[in-house]
Structures are given as structure tokens and as C-alpha cells.
Length: 124
Image 1 (spheres, one colour):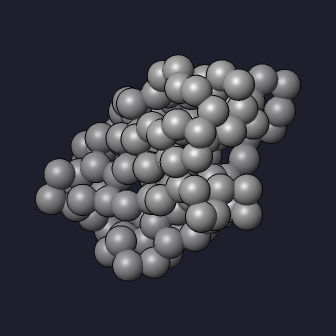
Image 2: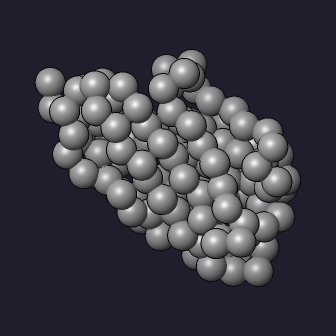
């Protein structure tokens, strides 16, 4: 069992940066791949980034590649999403998720545990 709590969302101007954090509790965090997904109003939830259990392997959606960086600190049971050069289209509720497997995945159904989400608003 893994419990996830996101933080770090807020309002930022286009071109700005935010760092999201996801604090995890539970014995399996260090062996779980982690992902960040986002959902804008009226749209389906979509993949943003994922990281392997070790942190050595990452995966990104094309829309965020080069601007977002996912990382994790297993000693702190925390995964991060550094978001730079934010665009209005990045505005969404961002969700942290954990899967029962070591490798990053962009598939929503492969993630078992989800946080409540944190709102990111980007003003133009």
C-alpha cells in the first residue's frame, strides 16, 4: 500500500517555473516506478512524466520533453517534477501515481496508487 500527497502547485506566469513534490508513505515506494499525470478541465487525464524505481530511467510526454524533469529521492520517499518554461496549455491538476513495478510507464491503467492532485495555473 502506498499513500501519495502532492504539493507545490500554484499560479505562475507563462515562461515561469514550478516544482511539484509528491510525498509517499508505505513500504513499497522504493521499489515502485512513479509517474506524474495531468488533467485539464474537460479533457482526459494524460501522461506527463515517469521515473523508474532507481531514478536512473525516465520517460516524458512529447509535450513536456525538454521543459520538465522528473526525479526522486528514495531516502525521503519523495518524487519531484521540475517544470520550466511553463505554457498556458500546461495548466491542469497534476497527479502523482505509483505502480507495482520497477519501470516507468505512460499507461494510466498500470498505476495502482494515486494522490489527490495539485492545481497548476499558468497565466498568459
